[in-house]
Length: 155
Image 1 (spheres, one colour):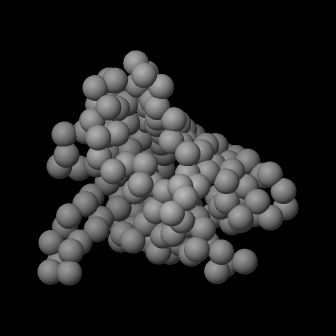
Image 2 (cartoon, helix red, strand yellow):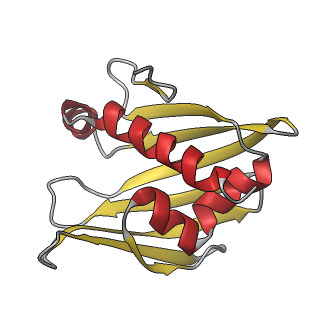
Image 3 (spheres, one colour):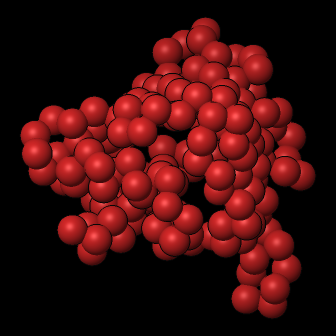
């Protein structure tokens, strides 16, 4: 299967740049990152909190079928410009990864298509490289495919 989400990680840098073009209008792509119901559907997680505004915060949690929490993430939203950008921290709890900084920029390409560029900045090159050792590119591509599918139903 083709990976529509592009992941760029230049050697020696502390960042990953993720780019994806969606067959969604800009407003709907942005809503897929800010509406708790839509986020829960495409991420396959429980949205415990999603306060989409400057100085807001979020908290996600995923459990296995037995009810055991297997993933928990949280962060603070530092900059929030509707339809344009979200700057936030991202922390995966109970992992060796420190907090990272994420810059999400949303762009309209046509009335029916849009682009997301996400710059993720890590504490060190080593932390960034450890993230890339995981099936990161495959996982984010799958998540974006699901976002396209779920958000497309809201047209």
